[in-house]
Structure formats: structure tokens, C-alpha cells
Image 1: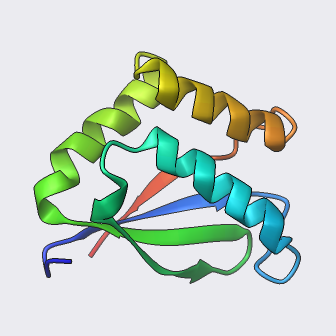
Image 2 (image 1 turned 180 degrees about the vertical axis):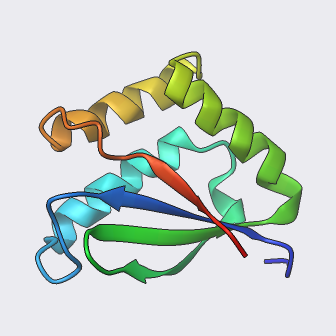
Length: 106
């Protein structure tokens, strides 16, 4: 991972790090992997308190592609595999649409 990584947090409301079942978390991560362009450029940076959020750093050379993919997911114009993964996560969350990524300022 380069020192110029951008950080994102993918939050799941309704859970805290203490209440999130590990098996469920792994299922979310499997779907998140399908949603992003280059999963090898994502690096887990930490777990965020207050809701369950996973902080990821994205390598600099992948940042533009990740930004485009996030926009496409929000606009529902992403590739079918990514949209299916997004729909799966939303169904796992009971249709709350709470998977939203949040870019972290450095």
C-alpha cells in the first residue's frame, strides 16, 4: 500500500463492532469484494465505533477507478456483478440501503 492512499468507511447501521456476528461480517465483505473494481488495492485499516464500520485504505493508483465505481453504484449504472452485490448487501440489511461508503478526509 502506498502512502498516498485514500480512506473510505463502509458503515452498517444497527450493529456495533461488539454486536456484529463474525459470519455476517464475512458475508458483507464477500459482497463488498464483488462491488469494488480492484479488491487487492483495498486494505482494512480498522473497525469504526458507533455503528459497525470498516475503514479501508485504497492505493493511490486505484483511487480514480474506486471513485467512479462508487458513483456508478450510487447511480445504479455499475456493472451487473457490482449491482447484484449491492442488492445482496441491501437485502442482508433488510432493505435499509445502509452500505453507503464515506470518504475520510486526511
